Length: 175
Image 1 (cartoon, rainbow, N blue to C red):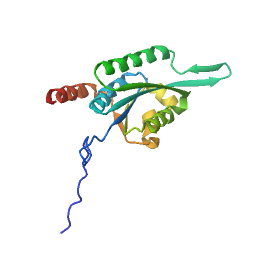
Image 2 (cartoon, rainbow, N blue to C red):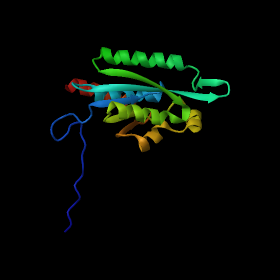
Image 3 (cartoon, rainbow, N blue to C red):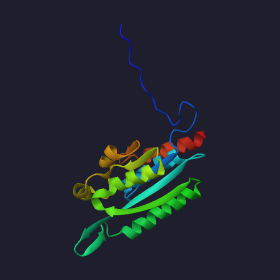
Image 4 (cartoon, rainbow, N blue to C red):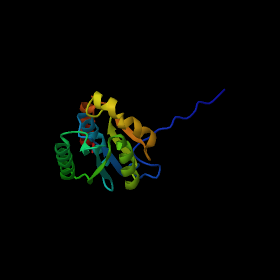
């Protein structure tokens, strides 16, 4: 009789009783999908000795006329994200903002580089950016991260925001 292979389980602690994820990177482009991933990043980053690195890659196109941001509302997005970082700090999350700039095709590499520099244990991302057309033109940052990231990637599907908020409330109620 053959024995069943043992199933591996993962929780938020290590066998030594420590926290598995101490440095969390939340990659955001300011989209709704990225915002839906925020409660997951916040949940992982809440607690003693944990930090959240909020990274936004300012994607630019370079042409004969100079360099231009991919998104016309880039300044508004940066302001929104900085506001989210301040809100996280108000909620006692050790959150730091990193703005990186580079070619539009290199967003995933920029995020992976920040994760590597920060010693990230996990990267949290949404699964859709600013829209399907931008996704077709620029490729999927999340898809690329799955292949090049120096650590695990938690990809939060769109539509999971309500579930995340419910889970967050449940966690707070239990604590």
